[in-house]
Amino acid sequence: QQPVQSPQAVILREGEDAVINCSSSKALYSVHWYRQKHGEAPVFLMILLKGGEQKGHDKISASFNEKKQQSSLYLTASQLSYSGTYFCGTEILVDDKIIFGKGTRLHILP
Amino acid sequence: EAQVTQNPRYLITVTGKKLTVTCSQNMNHEYMSWYRQDPGLGLRQIYYSMNVEVTDKGDVPEGYKVSRKEKRNFPLILESPSPNQTSLYFCASSLESRGRKIYGYTFGSGTRLTVV
Image (cartoon, rainbow over all chains, first blue to last red; front, side, top):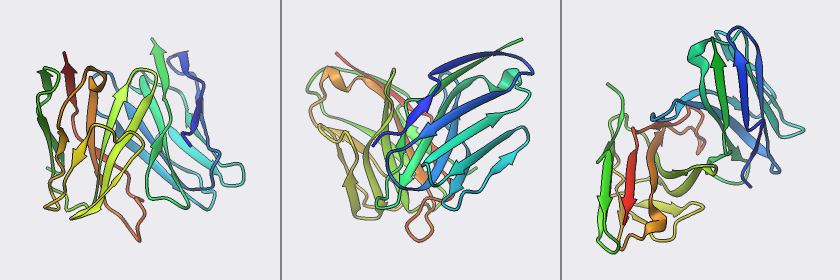
């Protein structure tokens, strides 16, 4: 039931783009995205609801493919501040829990 | 300031000595939850509560207890801690709309627990 995230880790240079994927085997109501910096709590980035919408703010956006039960997080022109671990959390249709993936570690080099 | 407050931040204890980690939120959120975070495993849900006096098990509830007597507080109790409960614990809360957490979680700062 735990969503699968890929890749597990990625190293980029500042200014490059990144895509992080999240895939579930269950029908989803929503997908949450969070970023966690080392030693800190996860911070909410955005939520995508059933309906296949794409959301974004600044240079971070996400999409939700309801048919495939997949979501992708897009980081455009990455900045040093984007470094951290990204988690997707999925809320399935027949449950009221949010289950998190194992995370994707993103490291941005200057 | 809207926040989730956890205490303590760090705790070292011995096997079998009962302990409580407190969690309090000031946002009037209905939904509260406890997660543990271990390297390579991500965040795993221990217990959650949809409102006062309503609690339910998450994916890894063994060895833990919770209570929700007031809306703002959701303490995590380890009656007889064991070394395999050494972990980083997070409390989180969320507003709900029609039973769905459409506003995302606000997490506490975390409690690093070591059981020796």
